[in-house]
Structure formats: C-alpha cells, structure tokens
Image (cartoon, rainbow, N blue to C red; front, side):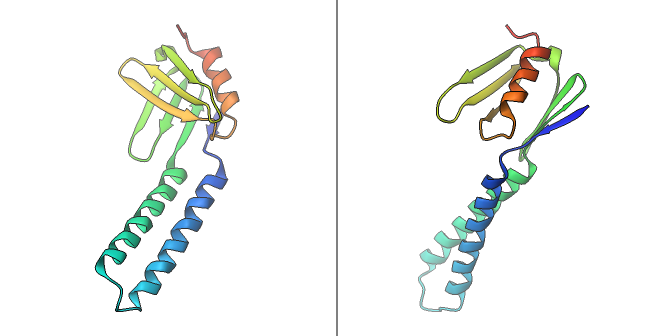
Length: 130
C-alpha cells in the first residue's frame, strides 16, 4: 500500500496568496513610472520568494511504498529502503522537527506535514533504528 505524506495544504495556499499579492504590487509599480528601481527590485525579490515557496509546497512529499521510502524535495529526491535507515532524531517543540539518517543520506520534515505522527510510527516500526 502506497502512502503519501505532504505538508499541510494551508501552507501552500498562504504562499500562493502572498505571491498573488506581490504580483499585484509589481503590476501596480509597472504602471507607475516614478517608482525607483530599488522598489522594483525588492518587489521582484518577494515575487520570486513566494513563487519558489509555492513550488516547494507543491513538490515536497514523503512516499512510503512497501519497504521503500522516498523523500521528494524541491531540488532532490532520496529513495531509501527502511533497512538503510539508522537513526531518527526528534527535536520536540511547538513545531516538532524530525531528521532521518541513513548513511550519507538524510532528510528532514516537521510537524507541518499531514499525519506526521503516522509517518514517525511507520519509521519506528519498519526501520532498524539505533
């Protein structure tokens, strides 16, 4: 059975709304010729930042398929067997952070992932953690 764990949808929606806001600010600035170049540059920075954030939240996922786990981030993909996972570090707090170690490969996720506790239980059940 294939399971997919993704970040909470509200995060991607919030980033998309921010991107739309900054795109509208940029459109407003374009029709206003008296705006300094630095203002265009800073607005373009925010547009790029929030559009990149949307791509991050759309692409990021952790897929569990049989005895394999795949972390798919914005720019990299790590596919591991559960038997390769050596350690799971948990940093509790208001936002819990998890780091999975498998030799040279590591990936992290947080409690902002949907069903993150279910994912942690899968890791604890299937991986030979030290």
